[in-house]
Amino acid sequence: MPLVSMRQLLDEAAKGGYGVGAFNVNNMEQIQAIMEAARETRSPVIVQASRGARSYSQDRFLYHLMLAATELYPEIPTVLHLDHGNSVETCKSAIEMGFTSVMMDGSLMPDGKTPSTFQYNVKATREVVEIAHAKGVTVEGEIGCLGGIEDGHGAGLDGLSHLTDPEQAVEFVKLTGLDALAIAIGTSHGAYKFTKKPTGETLKMERLMEIHRRLPHVHLVMHGSSSVPKDLQDIINQYGGKLKPTWGVPVEEIQLGIRNGVRKINVDTDNRLAITGAIRKVFFEKPEEFDPRSYLKPAREAMKKVVALRMTQFGQAGHAGDYAPVSLEEMAHRYHEPVAV
Ligand code: G3H
Ligand code: 13P
Ligand code: ZN
Image (cartoon, rainbow, N blue to C red; front, top):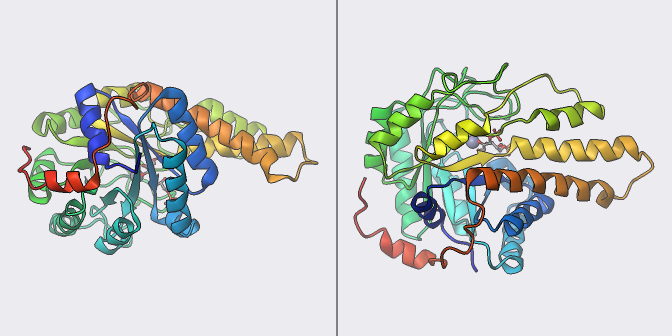
């Protein structure tokens, strides 16, 4: 089946009351890991690429790898999504290349660091919605800012100063007509999210519930959702790494989010940790090895395990065969119908 729109996957997830992991990729092995995990667990899939990933992979390579994925895994509904598009132009270029979903992250200015104004965010997101929906492509927007600057995203905030305001979220959805809304509830990107295990308090789950109460039909997105498992940290440190003690987002909190309107869950760091741990282990145990396959295969396998586990925990497992793909043309047609908010 061809690449499908994210809107279709998220609508189905809302009907079924489950969440869908969105996993970041930069190369072939990561795409293979996700697709294998999807086949094993019979899950629909969101593969996402950041601007950094597009530039690392000369995005045409990435796009064709994704076409290969649709050929080799025809039974899996698969979305190719742009993660954290920083401008209308970036989103446009992704749509032109064949991405079936884009994120216009207008919560920050195009530098990806400076918090923007509400007006700027509405204008940029609305513009992307018009361009994308005409082609049946899905749009994710963001209101509020995540914390953290470790990976070049976020505004260097403490994660709490720019939480999403529920009233503004309602206004934002009305004014933009987007499909999915990323909210800031205290998470941040990268491995160093919390210095101790976060509670529902630290994570402001109440605020998430309030947003869901006000926008019951909007698909919510949780960024910065890696759990940063201790066992993955330990493998890295056991084989010469130097990670400082850290905590991520507990899976139970994500599951609570899923019961309250979260349909897309962004995970990158956990997979980075799994890959790095597996590679370090081979380098440490078999220093004589120099065939890249000797460490890339275990790395791919380690990522597959993490992804398959998350797919099961988020509830998307078993749902790959629930529905037939809707073409982007048909999606474009459907956007002409008024959408209830
Ligand atoms: O949003 C952050 C993702 O982890 C992608 O990170 O910009 O380093 O590719 P990146
Ligand atoms: P993590 O760094 O927690 O994996 O978050 C990834 C993310 O939000 C990508 O947009
Ligand atoms: Zn993110």
